[in-house]
Amino acid sequence: MVDIYILDLLLIGLLLLVVTLGSGWITRLPLSFALIYLLVGILLGSEGLGMIQLRENNVFNAKVLERLTEFVVIISVFSCGLKIIHPLRWRVWNITARLIILLMPISIVGLAIVGRLFLGMNWGEAILLGAILAPTDPVLASEVQLTDTNDKDELRFGLTSEGGLNDALAFPFVYFGIYAMKDHNWGNWFKDWLLVDFIWAIASGMVMGFIVAKLIVWVDQKIQKKRAADALMEDFVAISAILITYSLTEIINGYGFLAVFIAGLIVQDSYRNPEKPMAQLEFIERLERLLEVGTILLLGSILLWRPMLNYASQSLIVIVLLFLVIRPVGAWISTIGKRPLNSQRRRFHPATRWLFGWFGIRGVGSLYYLAYAFSKGLKGEVSEQISWITYTTIVVSVVIHGISATPLMNWYEKQVATKASVTHNIISELGED
Image (tube, rainbow, N blue to C red; front, side, top):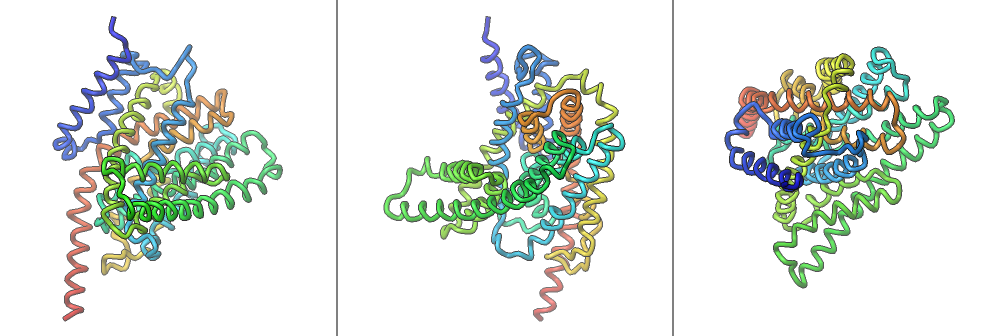
C-alpha cells in the first residue's frame, strides 16, 4: 500500500511540472494559476480523493492555516515593497492614500452594514466580517500588479501598493470586531484599542520597518566589502530581513505586515548597487509563487459542499454587493478629482477608475485574518457563518478575477495605458520644441 503522503508529493510534482511547462499558454488564456491550484486542491481534498486533510475527527486545524498564510503574506508584502522604486517620492503615493484612507474603510463599513442588515449579525460580528474581507490580496493579484521595477503604470502601482498596505491596516478593524463580539459595551475597551491597536501598532510597525531594513542593508554592505557572501546564499538576506523585521515588530506589539512592507520599500531604496534588490525580488517572487501553490491547494482541500450550500444565499449577497457595488462605488469615490501622473488628462480615465473597483481580489490575506480570528475565540454558529462566507467569497474571487484579469489588463494596456503614454510623450516633445 503506497503512503498517501508519497502520492501527494507525486501529484504536486506533476502539477508543478504541468503549470511550469504550460505557463506560456496559461498566461495567454483567461485563466489564472490560482484557479488551477484551487481545482487540484478540491480534487485532493475532503470532497475529492481525501489525500490532503486539515481536519482530524471533523475538527478543522486552523492553526496550520494561520501559520502558513501568515508566512505567505509577509513574503508577499515584502515583494510588493521591493517592486516600488523611489518610495520617497510622495506625490506618487496619492492614489495609494486614497485607496487606503477612503476605499478600505468604505469596504469595511459597507460589508458591516450588509452583515448587520442582511445576515443577522450583531455589529461586532459584522465589523469582523468586513475587516476579514476588506483587504485585497497581494498574493493572487500578480496579473494586475507591477510587472517589474520599470513599470510606471498608475493602475498597477495603486493595486500593488494597496495590496501591500491593506493586509496590514485591516488588522485594527479585525481587533475591533473581536473586541466588540466579546464585549458589547465599547466604552470598556475602545480607548485601549485606539491607543494600542491603532496608533501604537501602526506607528511602531512603520518605524521598525524603516530601522531594521536600514540596519540590515548597512550591515550587509559593510561585511560584503570585506568578504563577499557565497553567491548561492546571498538571496537569503531577503528572507532574514523579512523574518527579523516581522518578529521584532510583533515582539513590541506592532503590525509586522506593515513593517515588512516598509522594509521592502527601504531595502529597494537603500542599496548602492541597484542589482542587489533586483536579485532579491527575483528570489522572493519565486518563493512567493511556490507558497501560493501550497496555500491555494489547502484552500481547495478544506472546502465542503454542504456548509457552502447552507450559506450560499448569504455568500451570494456578500459577493454581489462587495464585487459589484461596495468596491466599485468605493473606488469611484476614492478617485474623485485624482489627476493621473503620466497623462495630460485632468482626471483618471473612467475605465481606470472602474478597473480599480473591479480588481479587489480576495485571497490569502482574508484566509489569514479568518484563521487569526479562530485563534482569538471566534467559535460557534457565527464562526461557521463567517468562515463559509469567507471561503466562498475567495473561491468566487479566484474564479472570476482569475478569468477576467488577463483580457481586461490586455485591453487596458492597448486602449488606455498606451494611448495615454503616447499622448503624454507627444505633448512633452511639443513643449520642448
